[in-house]
Amino acid sequence: MAGAGDVYLRAAPLLDAVRSAAPTDPDLNELWSTNLRQRLTVLSVFAQALARKTPMRDGMTADTAADIALAILSPETYTLLVRERQWTHDAWQKWAENALTGLLTTLP
Image (cartoon, rainbow, N blue to C red; front, side, top):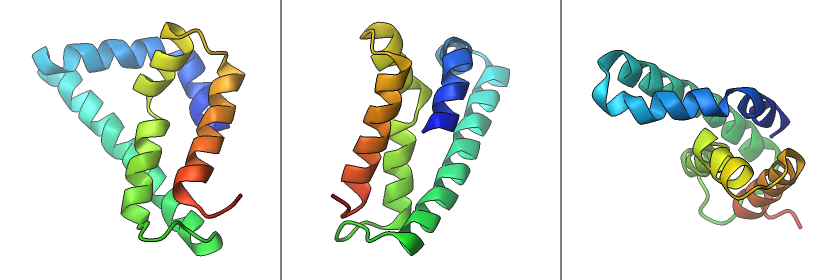
């Protein structure tokens, strides 16, 4: 969470601009698609490692865990909560950690 948060603290406005312009600009569309694929690749590795080390919720696959992590750790979610809803950066990081732990694992 800290790694994603640190990137979004600096880059969320730029990523939002790229995402917003992607539907009308082929180059930015490719850039956004590449960014999304790269984030999913990283989160797939995270989910697979988590599944090997931690009891996962019943029926939770590594693919589903990666999708959930992709949504929670997205720049869109960060921007919504930190910039639009005025959460602090630290509050977002704690929420993201708690949300992922609660949704993916059986840990208390």
